Length: 394
Image 1 (cartoon, rainbow, N blue to C red):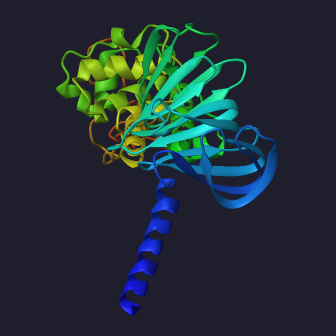
Image 2 (tube, rainbow, N blue to C red):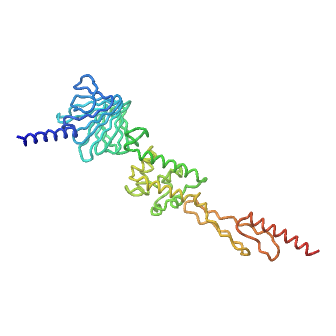
Image 3 (cartoon, rainbow, N blue to C red):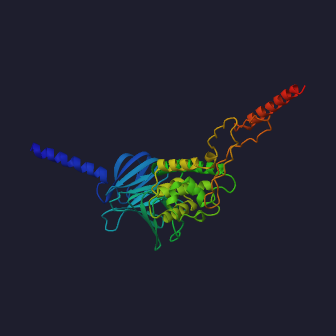
């Protein structure tokens, strides 16, 4: 008897855990609410809820100011925030729940190896698989994928939305030709959760891009040879042509895009180059571009900083030339190294060499490489020599 009682208690506990973790079965979901959250059951009036409860077909959840997390069968999840309203209905066959976004925002997450999570948004059917996506319903239905593969279907048309892209559907069937880059807000909690590092990385890359452009003179940073010199990895890409960067691209933008390209490994160099600049030109921030190419933050920033360090201002700081001994021949000024192919030249300036001043016969002019010192000393020697010569003629 005691053994049967213990077994019964354990079975009940396991069932409770299963229900709380997986939504209680395919035809129900588990709500966890905090703040001003209301639930309407079976088409009835809304009433406030706190903590956890089970949801069924016909229930609606509305968040005034707070949060609501809903776990469905198969490790699939919905999250609501201020102004969000969701309704649940029985899917075809009645064996599972179908979600509809009535207003506001909804974060949809489906496990990578599990079933997709389908949500209706206005006149569109959205299927989220293998990651997370943000859905919004306002003047248009907007679907933005953080990490998921998303399919949007509307009035017989469909569109695939890869990670880090989004699509807006203003009316039934009005799908664009292709997704656009995901638009994020730095202060948005969901954007920060999935893109926080990319947002910060983008800010740092923009600062470096602008600073690098500002340090160049007119006409610099416009040749393939220039970028091969500051990004040595480009030496392994003989097909690289500066024309592929576009005529109006600033040197800083070109540097950041090329640094992402050489560190990426998704496809050939030419494919990566085209993808990087096309995504950025469509409006993607640099941090989003780097994330899209699988390029890590620390190596990318180091690579950009090292390239900037090889730029003209750094190369202009030539090592000092040793001063020759008094009486030694005047050194011949060094000539500049040949320019890299393409036209942009990074030249290391040569220190000025003072022209010898006339001095007394038999006394070699001082030539230390410092014109002010050399001219002053040689002039004094000339004056003293003249005075001594004058005294000797008396």
